[in-house]
Image (cartoon, rainbow, N blue to C red):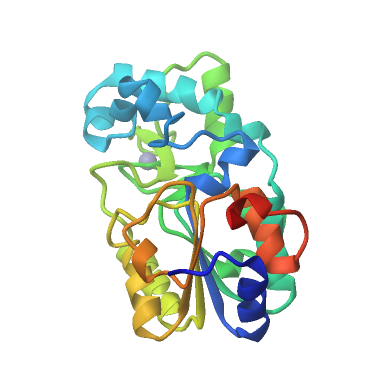
Length: 260
Ligand SMILES: [Zn+2]
């Protein structure tokens, strides 16, 4: 039976030297960025949105790209602010505990909150940059969004004429092997591993949990829905992430609901 006691987890963090956190969409929902697959998720509500996230449809169909650019323009992430869950992970770094922050999120709210870039491993890339599918050029996303605002419906690369997209891993696209290796290595060095707001259902990223456990790390899971690792977790919280994380990291706030 996994502990649900925040004080217990706090004492583990106190003793830990290399905490590795893996974060997913759940940590950003309290910042107003919807989850893809949750009950209020983008895909659950609009199956067409899933097509826009698929690289094959995206490359093949200008209409899918036009819809994608409009979608990027109106993304809630542009005005989103980090929430207490993000800030708790910043505090963990300030205390010298955070070895690595592996994130499946593309919103850069960890960077905006104040975690240093060298600690963050973005396994799915970032929506705040664009990339050219043909020549690989990258740059700030707002530069391309300015062109969309000015009337270009499907802007192409100014260097080579190639198709532009966000610098994120779309469905049907390979993850970057070097980035995954980096995440695996960091996880294998953890003495405490925290999986936050992620369903842990997709490999290879879920493999970071296996790597950490094999290295003997304690496993803390904070997620609203069950995960395949719940049975082996040392502590499990299904309450609000923006309440639980401040509580287990700094003892602030109230995660009383998780104690029921
Ligand atoms: Zn190009």
